[in-house]
Image (cartoon, rainbow, N blue to C red):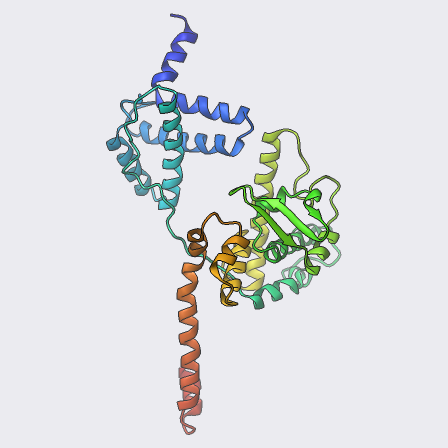
Length: 345
């Protein structure tokens, strides 16, 4: 048996070897994100095996007990449930492909491993904060931070922050448009005052009317490519496009984090604009089915995840207003100053 035949036989029986082949296959077919997910999960699982003195395991050795031990190892290393779930889903996907190819019988090794999406704290900003962000004098704040007026360093920092701010506002105005859909949006998606596109995640077709503020932002950033905004420039090589997108969203979130500090918001990210639109729509008594359809969700359950954390904040806000009302009316005149010092709502 030659080396090539031995390698093929090993790939047919060993899990990580098969995973590497699948990642390469996905990358060759232009599915860069999937390939990277497989590779990332494979590296994680390999580190776990190394901690046990192994380099790889056969499909038969990949048992429910081993998968549960892997999950415990991930949690013990300090990873959150969603990160553990991400790795488990990727490994499960690779395992399912092996089953379909007849390389192993389905032993359901990941059946007892958590593969859901745990609810996280959804941060949203209200209309007032959106307006403050629109009118934020970024140049003035940077100068106050020590940047010299009319310096190249100031301009170099100011431009990306203003661009990130405008993209955030555009996404909010476009009914919580995601950054990935924004980055890949083409000029051809805009016609007769409407933006028509297909969500990359759910494949749903969405139409959004171009409001005056959105048109102002479009006119402010003319693109020299087929893309609507100058976020991406590459169109041919899938790997190059993906790498450029990853760099763009990393830089976008870094700028938003700085804008958040300027705004006084704990954490501003690309998804805050989406959660903010959903929150504002909910508070304006827009029906849940309308919000769900507007955001391109496949089901109302997804929309409810966006809004579950809002319910508690609404209760807290209601209670706060109630207490203000009660103490303002019940406050004795003789102790007015004392109440002002002890009660700060």
